[in-house]
Image (cartoon, rainbow, N blue to C red; front, side, top):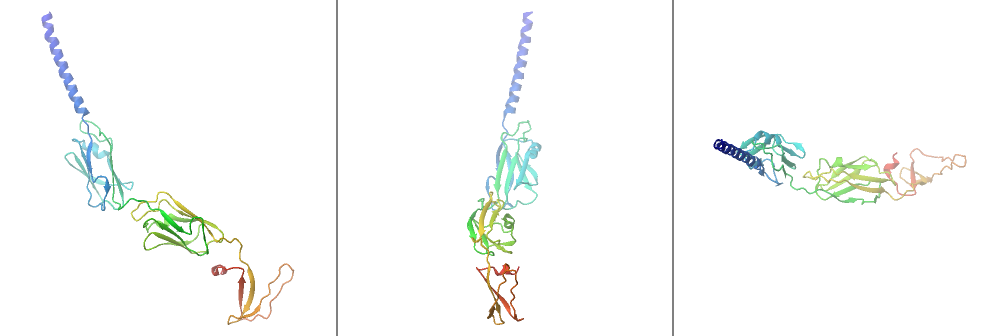
Length: 296
């Protein structure tokens, strides 16, 4: 009886060994890493996007469907559409439209990418590159008037100087006053100084606030990021002007007579008689006044 049992035990042991070896082989294959070994164009700044090639290379044969589903590319946050092609273990992505300048691009291959054995990507790819000439943020260097300063006249201009050339097409939408005032913004030829010309008088003895939005961008599309503000007042004199005298002027502008003001407190009306049709009125004020304000 015992002589027959030994071969059976030997056969069982052999089968177990073969099974263990097979399992070990599967574990070895399953544990082999699957990773990104390179991508183009690579991290950096490029003058032109039209000649750039976008590709991702893997450490081994990938499951192409899962890799394509896990791939994405954006330009300034907007999805970039394109088509895929393969050469061995390298994926090539061709955008439908040539890559634009002044744009920050992001290339991503997510964790859903795997190889044919179901091994997931070891590390997610987060690649970034840019077609902007530079990435420095613009900033406000100086203003006229200075912060907390004063405008001397009700029709004076306000200017803002920046650290670099700003985007001429969009800067106006990033500048505002409180309280609001109508006027026009102009950019100096160097693109670094913006000047506001009021179309209506500033309100005398009033504090204004100029807000420069953080969305203001330079010529390369880089935004300020943080807003800047300027507070200033128009004039430091809170006493309104008054009429100190009035004269009758002839056609040559010479004073013919001084007009007598009416005292509203005495209950009677003082009349200035003998007025000629061609005469004009000259007014004297307690201080310099805006000619434009007299028209109202």
